[in-house]
Amino acid sequence: MFIKMTKEQHQRMIEDIQIFFSEERDEDLSEFAAERVLDFVKESLAPHFYNAAVADVKHVVEQQYASMEDEILTLERPVK
Image (cartoon, rainbow, N blue to C red):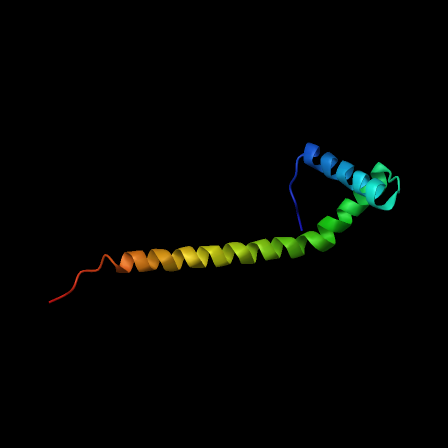
């Protein structure tokens, strides 16, 4: 899965991973190790979150479409 991010976003995520490991596991993680964790998350976990977000968007769009369809049907005029 290809995820576009700026160098700043990438660096911030690496720093966040290093902070997490330091605070939660009392481990100092090198930048290289943090980047490996980030690669794992992007390749293995991110697709699950992405697919869940796509399903949520699909649900919202379907609801909006149904609402628009109802609105359009209220514009119909009776035929004599």
